[in-house]
Image (cartoon, rainbow, N blue to C red; front, side, top):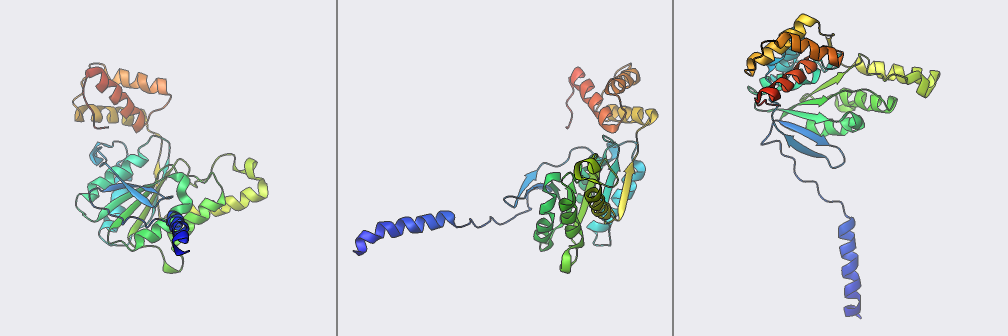
Length: 279
């Protein structure tokens, strides 16, 4: 009788093992400085260092100084503020955050950057709790943040920044970039109705108030755009007799002037000249 039951018990035991949750692999932040967070699995995927030097970013000198000051205070264990980088698209918000991190991390061996997807904002409270117990210091970056899903994501971010009864983690600096100062999507009232939209708007504006440091990125004028083009060209050894004219034509075709448009022109020129670039 016992021998008859053995195969059944074996199958039951194997089924239970398959149903049991797999123990999460121990997290290591060695071997890289930049990581991408994957909320469904809790994994941190290493990413290569950001290759663009901080000094190559042109036209954002004021923003650069203010952001680096705050980041250096955080890296040194001094009081700091979470930062919202907002303004016109393509003006270097994300590039500044990553390039400044690389510059400061060169002198701070325990500094790490973790990038989170804007669609995973609701996972931020759990991420902050996981990082709280770590010995490293983390810059958590969310690029192009806006609350397309309404107040739920806003409440999750507020919870992460406030930290509940435990308070905010002292080893986490949250950085968000956005094209909108108050992080609100367009068409908000039409999609949700006036009363619901007003309540969601109040929730979302209150989130932007949690950022102690707001850094604005205005549109780039023509001299600054050309200075960016010339700066990139000089750095990477690209020469063209009609550089300014071609750069202005490129911007005219794109319908805007920005650091991103300048870099895209430089990439096109480098390809034409057969010169490699770091990005």
